[in-house]
Amino acid sequence: MSALLGLVAILWSPALFAIEPVSVLLEQAERARSSDTAEFQRLMQQLNSKDAHPTRLQAEQIAYLNAYLVSFTGHLDEGISQARSLIEKTRDPDLKFRAGALIVNNFALNGRYNEGLRQLEQTLALADSVKDPALREHGWISAAVLYNQIGQFQLCFAGYYKFDSLLKLHALPADDAPLLETISTCDQAGEIVMANVARVTLAKKWMGLGKSDQAIVMLQSHLAESQATHYPRVISEVRSLLAELLFAQGDLKGAEANARATTQLGSEIATTPPVVAAFLTLYKIADKRGDTKQALATYKQYAEAERGYLEEVKARELAYHLVRQEAKQKNQQIQLLDRQNRLLQLQQQVDRQSAQNSRLLMLMFALGACLVGFWGYKTRRMHAALRRMAEIDALTGVYNRHHFTLQSEKCLVACALAGEPASLVMFDLDHFKTINDSYGHSTGDWVLKEVAETCQAFCRRMDHFGRIGGEEFAILLHGVDLHAATRLAEDVRVKLAAINSQESGYKFTVTGSFGVSASSLSGYDLAKLLAHADLMLYRAKREGRNRVRTYAPDMPITLRPQSDLSTLPSPHPRDGEAAESPAGG
Image (cartoon, rainbow, N blue to C red):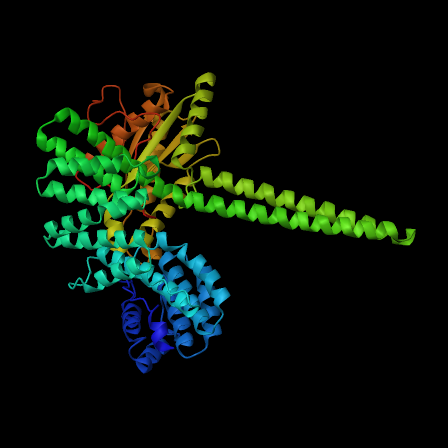
C-alpha cells in the first residue's frame, strides 16, 4: 500500500512563509512522509499542536499532510473525506490537484474503481491550471495506477507523457534506451501516432545534445510513416522540427520545404506551437537570404499565429465553464421531462378512478407547475451567471477589458449629449513582476484583488472601473472634470500605498503610477482618452513611479504609440521592466 501511495506523493517546494518554524516543520514533514513514518508522525503532531500558528496556505498544506497520514496508516475512507474537504476550501490549484490525486489513489486501493474514475476526470480537468510540471506528471501517474488496477494497460501513452514531461523539465535520462523502448512499445501496439510524437521528443533531446544529424536522419526516415497517419498535428510536429534542424545545418531549401508544408496543413492547427515555430523558421530563412520584404511578411504571419495560440489558451477556460453550464441545463431538462412523464401517467390513473381521487390529480398538476417554475428560476440564474462570466474579470470581480470598453463608450456618448465632463484615470502597479517572482503568483493574485477592492470604494454607480491588462486598471468618471479626477487619482494612489500586505503572509509595499485625461482636452473619444492617460502613465513611470501625471495639450505625443479603440492598452514594459502576465496565469 505504501508503494502505491508513493506514486502520488508529490514533492512540495514550500515558499518561505512569514512564520519560519512552521515552514521548517512543513519542509521536514514533506521529506519524511514516505521515507520515515515515525519522524513524519512526530512532525505532524507538532504541526497540529496549538503552539503552531500557520498562515492560511500553510494550514491547507497541513490539512493535505493529515489526509495523507490517515491514508498511509490504512484509513482510506477517512483520507478521502479529509482530502475532499480540502478541495472544497482551498483556492490553490496545486493543492486541489494533489488532494484529487490522493483520492484517486485511495479509491484504487480499496477497489472502488467507478468512483475513482469519476474523481480522476475531475482531477485531470485541473491539470492546465497546475503551475508545477512535476505535479502534473504525478497526476498522470495516478491515472496510470488506476487504469492498471482495472486492466487498462496504456503503457504507450503513459510512457510518452512521462518523457514529454521530463523533456519540458530538462530532466530526460542520459540513456536513450527508455525512450526507444517506449517507441518500440507504441509500434508494437499499433499506436503509430504516439510512436512518432515520441520520436519528436527523442529528436528534441538529441538536438539539445548537439546530435542534430542523428535527429534529422531519424525524422526523415519516418516522415513517410508520419504522413501516412494523415493526422495534421503529428505531421506538423515532425516537419516543423525538421525545418528547425535543417535550418541550423544550413540547408535552407530543405528547411523552407518542411516549414511551408507545416503551415499548409490546414486551418485547424493554424495556431498550434508547431505552426508558430514553422513561421519563425521561414522568417529566419528570409532574413538570412536578405529578402527583407519576405522576412517582414513571414514575421507578421508568425506574430499572428503566436497571438492566436495565446488567445486559444485563454479561451479554453471559458469554453470549459460554458460546456459545464450547458451540461447542467441539459440534465435539468431531462429531469423535468422525466417528471412531466410521470405526471401524465398519474393523470391517466386518476382519470380511471372515481371523483374521490380527483383532488390528487389537481395536486399533481400543481406540483408540475412548481417544477416548471423552479426550472425557469434555475435557468434565469444560469443565464445571469454566464453573462457575468462574459463581463467580469474572474480574479478581481471588476469589469473585464471588453465590457469596460462597451460601458465607457455608452457613458461618453451620454456625457457628450448632456454637455457634461468626463475623465479617465489609468494606473499600472509598480514592480508587480517583482512581487510575483519573489512571493509567488498566489500573492500576486491577492494584490490584484486588494487593489480592485480599494479602488471600488472610490467609484460611484455611474462610474466604470475595469481591469484592462495584467496589472493595469482604468476608471471612467461620469461628470467629473480634470481637476477633480486628478484629486481622486491622488487619493487612490495614497490608499494603494497604505494596503497592509501582511495578510498575504509577506511584507511589501503596493504602489501605482497614474495617468489622467479628460474630455475637456481629449474629447469624448475613448481611444483618445486612453491614449492620453496611457501617455501620462508612462511619464509617471519614467519620473520615478508612485505618482500622478495629468495630460496637457502641449504634452509630446511621440513618447508612445497611440492606442486604438479596438484594442485597449495591454500590459507592456515600462522603463526596462519585462512584460508581466496576469498573476493568475
